[in-house]
Image (tube, rainbow, N blue to C red; front, side):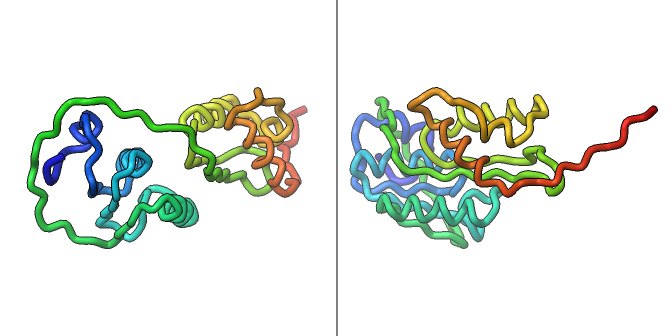
Length: 178
């Protein structure tokens, strides 16, 4: 790959570069970095902001950075990008492989049992996030997911452990009108 290939072109390469520099620490950039590291490239992620995954809580960002570091990916944050020459890559196909690590985080309302938010880093994150999002849209309590029987083996099984760890809530109910 020439210096400065775009992420779309990097996904279409028919060879593994010795060193890949990924500009941007968002989800797409991190997925690309992980894939090429697993293919054997040395990888450096450069992020201008103070943390990876800027829209996430700091603990999520820190866990992602630890996870990437464990895989041998170098991460630079707070970097200033001066110039990126652009080159065009060759066509090809790449696919990521099975992953054994991950991270889930849920936010549950105080005094209620509503799930306010959820994030995940790891294999099948999209599918697991879709399951939690559906539960949120349906107004299901976190306890429903804690007690759910999920298919085995799937990443969604982790939801039971995650929500079982939520401390009990004193659920407030509104008085019914007479």
